[in-house]
Image (tube, rainbow, N blue to C red; front, side):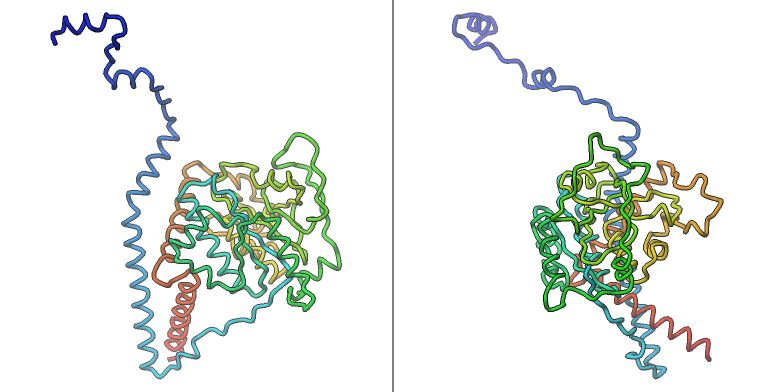
Length: 399
């Protein structure tokens, strides 16, 4: 058909109009993407560089693991040749006591996290289990909201190793339903709910005061909802709470938000607890520590701090032994008169810290995914290596 015939055909009644090219229609209908800001472009570029170097980082970590194992084997063989009994090198495991304190990791925030942040959360849950198992005083530890992506990762990627863990429970319900189950265990008639220890006995003898701070870290308009009396033994830990945690109390469940989002969703945990009439509190970091970085801590660090407090009854000592060195934390008593300017950080320093945390989480995840290896296995290997090295140095000094 000629072009003239095509034009005539299109002008006849009932004829279909000649369609425009598809690309032209899409260009006209598709909205133009807004330009990205400089900070957004910078974050995107850093993320691309991070992803591009993932294989190299994995290779370097694997090489370091092989080097460390080879070094331990060499040192062990040398000690055996010297007639050293290796059984004496094993550190005696300190007795662990169960206490009437519940810790709940609330993992019901999956829709607020990216994939790499979900990987980081699963690694933090693994560390929480390991820290609680090895602690001098253990708690009843539960993982709430164990469904969707995190459950899938634990079953498929991590080989369902959590099914063999003892002293930790995984539940697909919310933190309130988990607290009800912990409450039942702690109040067991046979006394299996936990042993009263010195640090908790003090809270019984002198009930800690719950006084609202003058400065509200996260003001919410409207009156504060009344507390739910049926769940008054639940405390949701949040840095946005206007209440400061003075001491841990027996027969109480402390909820830690399982949220890895680089503080994008401000006040999320606090609002969730407040809407349900649950008490909230923040750790007294500012009262004991001067930080050169953000006071936002990983989930496993919050859990470990509470376990350390059960052991020593001192927040300053607990913070100092757990908070990562990269955050530059110092006790206020050691930093009197030099607090000006502390707590401030440049954007670049914050991003570097984020990358350090991501690298640490990535390494932990790979350690968990390796054949039959979990985080606590690597920790025990490291302790053994340190013990061998220590005895070796002692023998060299004595000779």
